[in-house]
Length: 357
Ligand code: PLP
Image 1 (cartoon, rainbow, N blue to C red):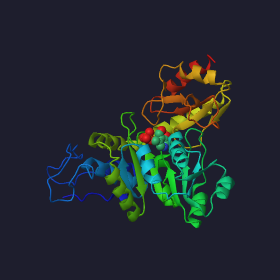
Image 2: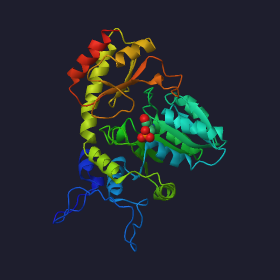
Image 3: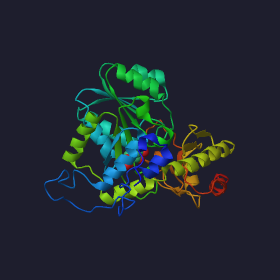
Image 4: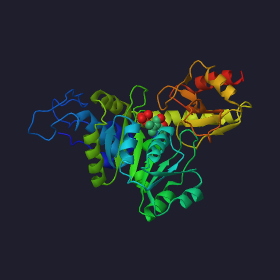
């Protein structure tokens, strides 16, 4: 009988397909079944549906193998963020490098109740981040590339500096995914994902995840998930795992298209600035005015004006339509999530819209 391959010795595109499977034994299914149960017959390890589910575990094993750590699934990225921020003691400082507006929103909410002090810095300004880190810093929260500014952080330098003062480092890896960047290998303590985006990849699931390298920290986080109940449904976890199987392929295709579109967009006279970090399938286009950005996002046939990102279908959004978005984000910035459609079809659709501006 074939031995089940050990994911850690394999490359990411093999891991994505083979991790988190039932053993290769007669009559075993290839995919973990969706177990719909709120409870388990007493006397075993599982006990209750808030504590574990086979579909979560299969998803966690696969994501953990891809990121090089131990994963924990949550009901959303925001639930994962809340669970992590709960670990920060009163009065200590979190330095956040231009993070997603929901992350900043949670920090602001805690700060308004005196639970934490937040310093916001430009994550791409290494000197400024280094200056903001001091002995009071408990947590350095990095996002790279940032949503939606597309800033890129010098992760190894910032992680090392935070560790020197005894702070933990979280990297929101939602945009890069473990296919392009593995922050735990660079020394980060925690990786956060909005699984809703690339990992699930089909715009049909809301889910989150944390991945850590320290098993003791995993136990603490799992204890909090058990207690607070920020768990995904079994079907969501199953769908997210199904999406994860094709993550390397989707990232490869969408990244190649994003690089090509960034090149073509830069040459278009209506575009003031293209922010493309040189990797991944996300970019931002800055137009001179909010009105032009609105017109662009309402003039396409294929591209969908929608929030969220990372699906097989190309979407874009003028981010300042959200009142909570950072004022540092230009009014005319359109965040672009490139899908896996034909790149020339995507360009033709963008071009006819840009030519109207
Ligand atoms: N982190 C990033 C970078 C995001 O873009 C998002 C959502 O847009 C989140 C976290 C929050 O994830 P969720 O919407 O799954 O709660």
